[in-house]
Amino acid sequence: MTLNRIVCFLCLLLPLALPARNVDLATVPERRTVQLTIYNSEDLTLVRESRIVTFKKGVNPLQFSWANTLIDPTSVELKFREPKTGLIMLDTTFPHDKPQTLYWNVQSDADREAIIEISYFTSGISWAADYLAVADPDEKTLRLESFVRVRNLSGEDYENAQVRLVVGTINLVEKIAELAKLPVGRVNELKREDYKDLRQRAARKMMAPAPAMEMAAGAMAYDAAEMDAPKEIIKEGLSEYFIYTIEGTETVPNGWAKRLRSFEADAVPMVVEYRYRPREYGDQLTRLYLLKNDAASKLGSTPLPDGVMQIFRANRSEGLSYLATQNLKYVPIGDKIELNLGVDRLVIFELVKQKIYRDNLWFQIKGGNLYRKLGEDGFKLELDSQVAGWDEHTVYRQKIRNYSPKPIHVQIRRDYAGDIVFRSRLNPTLHDFQTVQFEADIPVGEKAALDYEVIARLGYNQKQNRVELQNGEAGR
Image (cartoon, rainbow, N blue to C red; front, side, top):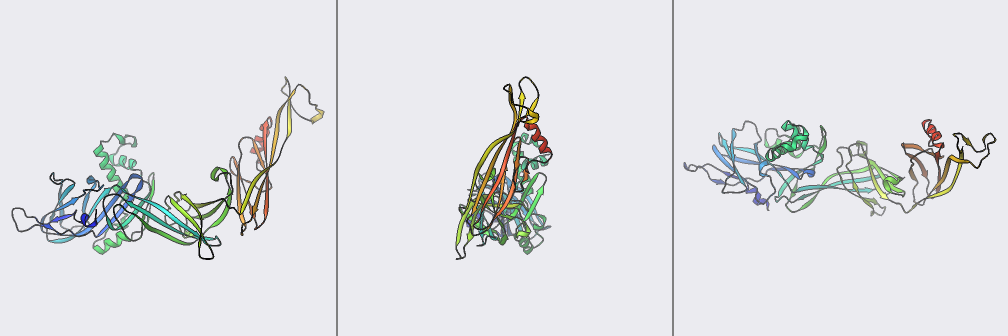
């Protein structure tokens, strides 16, 4: 569908001097502005378009058609942007002889020009975010670019459109319940027509422009308010979302996917860290770029939506080295951004089990309740005794060899469960109740042997271990 065809969807019938019919067909002005607010999770896009129309004194029928589109006809609304214009909406009719068409009858008290706004919901428009990160050769900062790919399968062309993206979740069911004055659990009891109407009202309310974007009197004020609106971050009730306005305008034809620039940030500070976290990255030492979505990092004006991140490093020869592609999860303002680069072939990591041994043995004499430790008070092991408790020691060595041209920082997390004591000279800390964490710096070309010992206390010795845990002995 071409732009010219949609322009013909809005037809203004002008009154003539003929007493019998008093109408005639006039040329329809093109859209003056158009705004798309795209809400992915509901396949719902709110379209707001404005036109300057010349009205004649009397009744002016306006025609709107949605043939071959995914526009929801029950959502179509007409408003007059300027207050006290002398225009009154008389009625809306759906003629039987013209399917997929409606008429508005507008009463005007004089010949005049006025800005009208037509808004409606359509399906078939979606968006997806993607990012490009390029680290500097020293890997201390990176340039981060964000793009939005808009796909239009709605059957309609939108020329010079302002694009707004709803990121997060709008809890429409809660809003419907609020409008219907029903408990959330009873929303499904509404009639289909009532549910549809309330759903549209709720979505329109949530996706409407902020007060700062509403039009003041005059066409220039409308342009400034609509097209230069700031990004909005909204938290309301149990819903948390933000509306992101893409700078400038773009033509989004039907059947096309178009890539729009969202933002660009230069010299974003970052650090490089190597991590061993089996639960998150598998059984390997993983290299990461770490940065933050905040003002200090030249980011932080809005949360970052889900998307795909491509990561490169600039070479000193002005070329780029590809590093990784990863899915970026929603990043709130102030949260960390972790870019996983995978295994570094210049950093070798291996875990070696050094030895296993047992000690601190306790025995129980058969038929009795007395526990005795071997060798205490001259006690001798007798044939009718059995082992009641012991400590099992496993000594590990983590070998890391840094063949990269830069010193590296390593963070290691080890999980343990049950009655376990973790000992190391690496000053471990408890990350959570069953995970210890320790860190080390390894210079260029150096090797490091990071040793630790896991002591499993079994049987009778478990009681002693629990006491040690309460007294802060674990992790020493």
